[in-house]
Length: 345
Image (tube, rainbow, N blue to C red; front, side):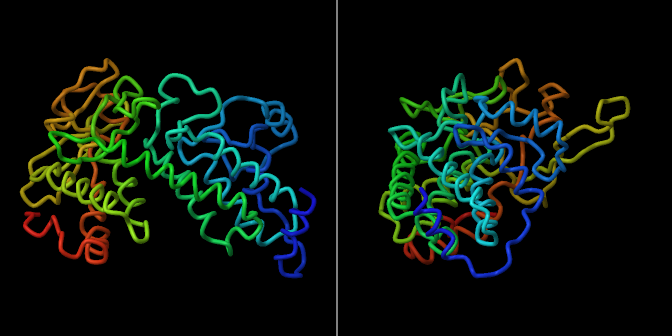
């Protein structure tokens, strides 16, 4: 470790030591003993001495996660600050965070939402909120970008590359196939069988019109994609095209006397751009809306006020994917296979 620390210092320009910013200090403090980070703490707050003692007392808690951008966000941020400072704490923390991400990977290539010893739906292979894709994007970046991660040894860099490759294999195996056609992905898949699985009571096994966007974009960023990767992208984009909802718009309508003072309402609008549901029933592409009772409904109006207005059920999730990302990718990697050529907007 001492040699690695000395080697890491060598790449830094001989400038004055920069003071650590407030965000970096908070990140350093919140890292758990296992190398990961919890979610939803305030990275930008000033920490009092009393708060510092409480945080340090929680260092051994088993709440490290990849949910809501946790852990991979901290690794990327501290890697950038490490290039500006001689503080060796950054190096130790970043390397520990990288090894934590590697240790969390399942043998089949997937990542859980939490690690170690995840329970319930946190053990599922998790695409929800970009958890697995966030980890994979970071590891792929580490394996490729020596300028951004010059302090990473060749051995660790190779481990990151292999982990990302295993992750890609897992993604391809998780893609949901309906009647022989590739579609997209569930927000979470079984960590053993890879089948679509539920998470919270209102997040049922389904095809995700939101999380699948990040998965497809990750696959599109692969240079010299294999025929399997090209087929996966083409199948998913075709599914997005078939699953788009037209002629409707979601608005917030004033609703006096309600907790928020407004209510989400879906109205007809012939000029509205295509929109996608968060979840679709596998096999029918029927949008799913659900209250905490776990019963799927066909419209957002049928579910409880609390869930209707406290969750993202409809969105323009795939708008840029379809209008910008796919055309550029298709021209480069599938010039004779534009599956949107005859599609109606």
